[in-house]
Amino acid sequence: MKRIAYRIVNVFVESERATFGGNPLAVVEDATGLDDATMQSIAAQFNLSETTFIFPQAGAAPRVRIFTPRYELPFAGHPTVGTSFVLASMHEELQATAINALTLGLNVGPIEVTLENGAWTFTANPHQSRAIDAPASVLAKAVGLQETDFLGEARFVSTGTEQLVIPVASVDALARTKPNPELLQAHFKNDAGRYMAYLVARVAANRFQVRFFFPTTSGMSEDPGTGSACSNLGGYLLDAGEATPQAIIVTQGEFIQRLNVLQLSLTKDRRIRVGGRVLEIARGTLGLP
Image (cartoon, rainbow, N blue to C red; front, side, top):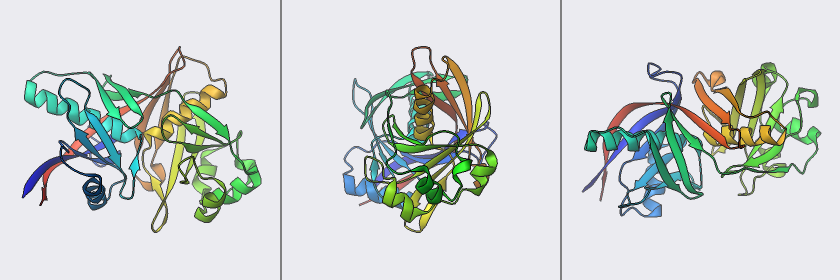
C-alpha cells in the first residue's frame, strides 16, 4: 500500500490562537503519480471546500492543482495561501532555513506568494470584469433581497475564477440574504457554467464584511473564507475608481460562526494582493493501493 502524507490547515485565521477559525484546507504533500480520478476521489473523501495536490519539480516552481469534492478549479485563494504555508513549513523542516517568498505553478499560471507580517499573501493575475445580463429585479429575487438593498451594480469579476460580486448597503442586508439556486443557475452562471454569489457590505472606509454562497448537492452552502472572491472584490473596487495604494480588511464567516480575516491590498500600480494567517491543525497519511 502506498502512503501519501497530507496536512490540514486553517486559512485566514484571526490569530494563531484561533484553532477552529479560518477555512479548512487539505494539502497532499507529494502527489507524484496520482491521476485526475484519484485526486478527485481524495478531494471527495476529505469533503472540504478544496484540497490541493503538490507536484514537486526539480529546479522549478512546484506544480499545484486544486480540487473541490466535485471538480478541479483553475485558481482559488485560500488553497493558494494555505499551500504556500505548507510548502514553506516543509522547506524549513528539511533545510532548517526559513523562506518568505515562493511561486506556485497553478492552472492560471505562476502565482507569486510572500510572507508579510505573518500573513502569506498572493499577487493575483490582472482582473477582468463584465456586466450581468439580467436586471436588478431578477438579481434581488435570486438572492432573497430587495432592489433597495443593493449599493451599486453587480458585476462578474475574475482574477482566475469568475464570480458574481454583489454590493449591498448594509450588514443587515447580508443577514437577510437567502440565495435561490434555481434563479442563480438560470440567470447568473459564470464563464465556466457554474453559479455562485458573493455579497459585500462596506462597514468602514477600509473594511468589508462579506458572504459567499455556492451550490452543493444539497442546495446552496456558505463558504467561510474565499480568497479568490476577495481578489475579485479588489478588481471590482479598481473598476469603481478606488484610490490606490490601499489596505483593506475583509471579514467573512460571521454568520456561520467561522470567522475569517482576509487582508486585501490594492497597490500603487493597481495590482491586487490577498493574504491571511494560516494555522496547521493536523497531519496524517493516506493509504492508496
